[in-house]
Each structure stands twice: as C-alpha cells, then as structure tokens.
Image 1 (cartoon, rainbow, N blue to C red):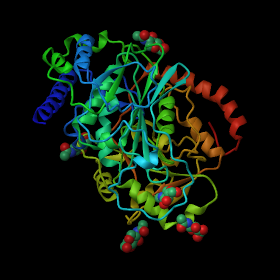
Image 2: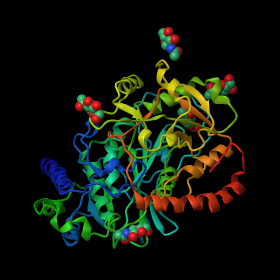
Image 3: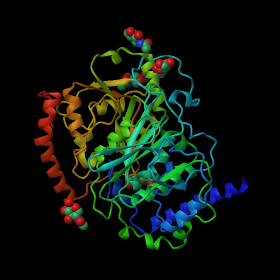
Image 4: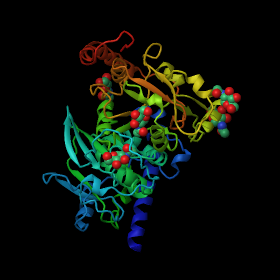
Length: 498
Ligand SMILES: *[C@@H]1O[C@H](CO)[C@@H](O)[C@H](O)[C@H]1NC(C)=O
Ligand SMILES: *[C@@H]1O[C@H](CO)[C@@H](O)[C@H](O)[C@H]1NC(C)=O
Ligand SMILES: *[C@@H]1O[C@H](CO)[C@@H](O)[C@H](O)[C@H]1NC(C)=O
Ligand SMILES: *[C@@H]1O[C@H](CO)[C@@H](O)[C@H](O)[C@H]1NC(C)=O
Ligand SMILES: *[C@@H]1O[C@H](CO)[C@@H](O)[C@H](O)[C@H]1NC(C)=O
C-alpha cells in the first residue's frame, strides 16, 4: 500500500516536473485550436488551476521503455475498455491509481448507477429520452477515426438526470478540464483531436488528469479521441484501472532528466508541426453525441460555467414556469464574459457584475468580434436584480441585428448538429447551425443568473493573414454549397441569414 502510494506520488511529481520543463522551454500553446483560440498560447497562472501546468502536454521519449514497463506489469483483470473488440490490439499502459470500481463489468447502465452526492430529485420532469450507450467503440467520419468512450467516466447517468458539458480540444487544451470539472456539477464529454504523436501525449495527459487531480475527472469525464488517417498511431494503448501508476522506472523520468530535449515538438509528427487544420465541428459533434444525457451544454473548453448550473437548471424546470411551455423548440442561452488575466473567474452573478463595474471583466470578444457575441438585452441583463435560482430573463430570436449571434446554450440531443466540413481556422464554424435554429424557429431563452467566463485573459485583435485567407474560402463554401443544402433541409425565412 505504502509502496503503491509512493509510486503514485512519483508519477504525479515527475509528470508535473516534466510538464513544467516542457512549458518553460517555450511555446507551450498550440497554434490555437478549439473555440477560444488560446488567448495567444501563453500560460497564465490562474486560481482555478493551482496545481496543473498549462497545456497538460506530457511528452516522453522512449517507446521501447514504455513497452518494457508495460510487459512487466501484472496482467490486468480490470480493463476500462473491456467492451473493446478482441481485434482491438493494444499495449496496456498503467495510468490509473488503484481503484475499487469494477470497470470490467459492463452491466446495463441502470444497474451500474452509483449514488449521486447531489440531493435527491424525486419529481419526474417527463424528459423524454433513452439512456445512452457509454461503451468503447470505433466509428469513422470522413478521414477520421473516432475512439468513442476511449476513457469512460466511472459514473453512469440516466439521460434525464443531468446536463453534460460537451467540449473538444487538442492536447494543449486539456488543462481546462480541471477547472471545468470543479465548476460543472454534472458529467463532461470531451473530444480530443490526437493526430500523430499527439496521441501519445494525450494518453499521458489523461493519465495525469485522472490520477493526480482528485477523483472528479475519473468519475465524471469521458474522453473520446479523434485520429487522423494521415497521421495514424502505430499502436493503441489501453488505460486500465487495476494497477498502480507506472512502476519504479517511470517513462517520464528520462524526459524530466533530459529536459525533454529529444522530444522537441519540431521533430514530432503532431498537429502543430504538421500544419493540420482543426476539425472543430466534427469534434463538437463527437462530444455531443457521446454525452450521457439528453440536455447538453455544447461549449468551448476555455469557457468556465458559473457554479451549480445543473442543479439550478433542474430546479427551474421543476418550478415548471409557464414560459417553459411555449410550443417551439428552445435552447437556454448563457451570456459570456472575459476577465483580465490577473482576475479569478467569478462564481456568481453578483461577483461578475462587480468585476464588470470595476472594468476587470468585459463581454466576450468585445474587442475582437463584438457582433458575434452581442446578446439581446445584454445591458438589461447586467442591471437586473440578482434573484435566487435561474429564470428565463428574455426570449430572443436570432433575427437582425443578431443574425450573426453565436450563442452558447444548454440545448438537447435533438438540436441540429454542426457542419463537419468546417474547420476552426476557417471561422464562422457555428453559423450554419445558428441558421438552422433560426429557420426552425427556435426560442433563445436567455438565462438570468447563469453565465460563462472565458479562462482569464482578455483577447485582443491579432492579425492572422493565413487564417483570414482560409476564412474567406470557408465563407464562400458556406454561402454557396452549404447554404443551398440548408435551404433544402430546413427551409427559408427572410429573418434568417447565413
Ligand atoms: C428520469 O426517469 C426515471 C425513469 O423514467 C424517473 O423515475 C425519474 O423521476 C426521472 N428523473 C427526472 C429528473 O425526470
Ligand atoms: C407543468 O405545468 C403544466 C401546465 O400547468 C402541466 O400540464 C404539467 O404536467 C406540469 N409538469 C410538471 C412536470 O409538473
Ligand atoms: C500550412 O497550410 C497552409 C494552408 O493550406 C499553407 O498555405 C501553408 O503554406 C502551410 N505551411 C506549411 C509550413 O506547410
Ligand atoms: C489587473 O489588470 C487590469 C488590466 O490590465 C488592471 O487595470 C488592474 O489594475 C489589474 N489589477 C490588479 C489587482 O493587478
Ligand atoms: C431591484 O430591486 C430594487 C429593490 O428591491 C428595486 O427598487 C429596483 O427597481 C430593482 N431593479 C430592477 C431593474 O428590477
């Protein structure tokens, strides 16, 4: 037991040291992907995230060593990926602290449900849904292979009992998972883009997150990996939960000692050096479709929620206010803000409003693209008295002048998906979905006491000529081909533009 504990500590400490070294050796951030755009790839220290280096990007060198370490490990009887087909060839890698859960048993979801720590919620809200698969599986989309539930959360959820925060990123975005898990009181579904050697880094990072940051990530976060056919890993690794962490000789030790010198990103076959575009909408859809619940908050990993949102949202549904009975489809919009780098993320609206008044917070992307996120009635939202619980503050449409509004909202599995041809680099990636919601006459119910705050650091405009060129191309595709399709699929409405 003691030995295991010390090994466990060792893994975390060594990994942490390696991460810090990697970070200090410069250019920690990726070229920016996933939603927020990385605020310049710098690595701010922020209070939500004390113990974790930015961009948990665990780089290690020696394949041979790892495989030796793996062979020495006792055979696992407790395989998290137990539902993987037998032709799924893997090298096992120890990434888990000892665990008492029986991940091996893939019982029907209902029988593996563990007791929630949340207060009991007896009333049946009549949410019409089917409990969802949470088994490992492969699927294929275009030139990408998806490893669904590659690392599943230990806790199972009924489809009607929570809201899943769904998000995506490359390996440099994984450090957001810790603050997100602390702030979000429900399950999380995370799609990670892992071309080439990013796959190995992702495995290490997920191991670190699950093992070294408390139980929340293991219990509530499911990771899905997206592999790129052009940059495929040579072997798939299996995470399992029975054994302790990497044995006496951590594969990371070499890295830490050598200062990661042989693993400089330039020599690696990874996203950054391969100049790959980021299939943002494919990842969004993967995270969404693998969410265990009917209600989802499809977000970007750098957007941190105000506290207690799931509980407050269900309380609101339970109050069953008349506005919830409008017959049209609806989503529940969360206003978005930014705070300066030296600020903490506010937890309540009161705290947020104080920061806004003091000029320490601003509406999201005010300086970059104010119209993208200008929210109907935003001024009134700020002066409205803070109430107990959540309420619908205002019902908006995505009509002029908000026709380019890109709201982030709590929606459901029934909402239209995102167009997977669009890349993050090409911008406007959420516009086609917004158009579909508009034509389908969605109500955008703006919530009063819930909001999102971008990871600290206010984004300022930057010139990105390469991206601008790609954006121009993508806009042309959206306006011609995609618009034509959407008109056929969803119809037209003179209030809705693309
Ligand atoms: C979820 O569904 C189950 C079974 O249908 C029901 O007993 C439970 O009350 C529902 N929960 C909510 C919050 O609606
Ligand atoms: C909510 O209110 C409506 C109309 O008053 C009623 O028909 C419905 O049963 C209520 N739903 C719940 C879950 O209480
Ligand atoms: C990266 O991709 C862009 C767009 O395809 C291209 O214009 C650029 O030359 C590429 N850069 C490198 C270093 O390959
Ligand atoms: C935080 O940063 C803002 C903007 O850069 C500055 O105005 C403010 O004085 C700073 N506050 C503290 C406590 O350092
Ligand atoms: C907020 O509450 C105060 C005191 O209850 C009231 O005087 C004021 O009009 C309210 N403001 C708004 C915008 O409702």
